[in-house]
Image (cartoon, rainbow, N blue to C red; front, side, top):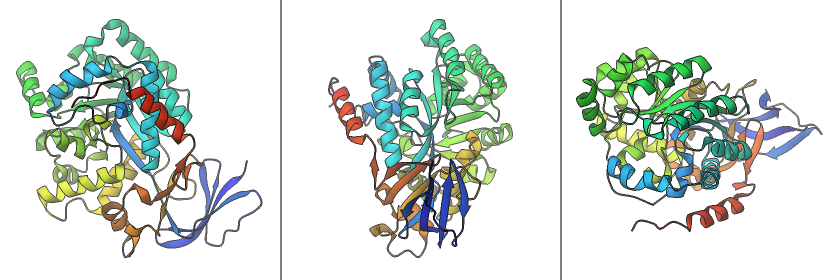
Length: 415
């Protein structure tokens, strides 16, 4: 097998040569010389950067893009999304996931943390597309005991099938999961060394309903059940106070911030400054295409910064923090030896076209990447040492798009 040789690529502003052997960066040195065993990419007008980690999404909802817009969370879920999803087949989920992964690859994402149904179909699509994922099997009481039991079995069955794909337990939210099922999910996750992925404190209604039913806010209620721990990834976490943020920090919970979805559903704004000051493990996610309506992490990260600055001042969420939240914290939380371009690290990377108009002038690359650019600047995506996109082309992309068009044509769209 040939090594991949990136010739004259810019790394942190300096031109160098990089060899990828297997799935690792084996050598990074400006004096490195290509050999006959190298596949060479001339990269003199490219910069190499680590890719994005999408910390919360529902990939197959790519098929629901634009289906139900401009309404609050609970009518959106109850009246449109869940009835739609009840009609989706294994094949629909497979097709929708492939469409989502294609979009993620083309916008620089190499890993996604998912929560959905029929996860065997999601696993198949992810394995074929070649990116990383943590696939959360959704748990809700209204599924019934038989489906819940099979869901736990699915986590066990698929947990070791691929080095790129993890499985997780995904109790949906405090308003859909009972105390008994929360405890069951947490115990299973601890015993099987998996992550626990869930929605938390997304809306004011969720908080008020939880207080009315349990006498505690969602964070305090889950903490009283012993659910919160370092293996938890909580999505949204919008309606919390400073004491709750401290609880999450003390328990080691990772928090997936979804700024565009929060705004589109009018759920509220994330307490960015509090989270930043608390040194919580914050990640960034896009949520699903039906509430975003895309999976572009570069755009998501910029929105995270703009909202924080609008609410707390221009010095909030500097680029250095944005890089942590969207790029480097993800590999740490999900246990991947990646997140930086360095010898010995897993070779996940993006090649950014420095001739793209949004990188001219290039006084500050990071500023251009997070504040000026968009995904059109991404020429190449490398995952686990393999090139999945080159010259902005992904193998099989036309067939993936055509399949999604045929699949979605059978549903009526809400006007």
